[in-house]
Image (cartoon, rainbow, N blue to C red; front, side, top):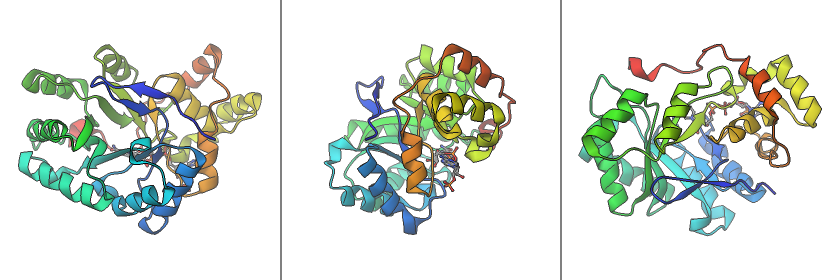
Length: 273
Ligand code: NDP
């Protein structure tokens, strides 16, 4: 049974360190995968309005039979809903699709600096938190200057910053800044969308632990204190990705994995939007 530890957030809440991602999980298989992941012991699901599967995530949650407070659900406001009123409406739509009165974590999906509406959007998230609709609030794809602006203009830093992060693109400076400022970093594309898993070095390390390359990479995130939610359309691989709580990588392995850094992203650079 997968039993992930929980990390503390700056607002006093906690978050399971491991979850399941749902980007590009087709709606027709989402409910079954979410139900299966929860049956395997996962307690955290990451979705977004953009993904088009919030309704089916909600179905999977209900099918699991778990109590609401036993599952941590994240969703996100999409780029064309930035702005105070727009964000409140977008939240209502997401909550209705999920079939939830409140979500555990609501994120600004991308900052879109060129539109310059992310501060108003952040104020809407603060309202949602005050109203008890979002237990915790955070952002995604924010660089340090944008985080500093949120703090300077609203007095409140996000509890989490969800960014692209994997051994090829480890985001060391941002992870350090987040940690120093009480922001939990979440890794999206933690497996570099699967591209990383063919690296011979990972196969070599995995063999020594009797694990798979994917498990070694998930463990790398956990060891670094990051929140991680790999995505798979296969329940077998979802279980595999969660079977990571019986080992840790040693310092030498971390040094070896650090050599995989290339600076390559799988997604776009959020500062350029
Ligand atoms: P991941 O790095 O999680 O990689 C997913 C890919 O890896 C899929 O092709 C999957 O294939 C494959 N895979 C998964 N597990 C295994 C395994 N054990 N062995 C071999 N292959 C495997 O990429 P994502 O982009 O999905 O990122 C994870 C989550 O992060 C998303 O689902 C989403 O929730 C979030 N995200 C957030 C973004 C943001 O802007 N905030 C942007 C992108 C993602 P298969 O499905 O066929 O098993």
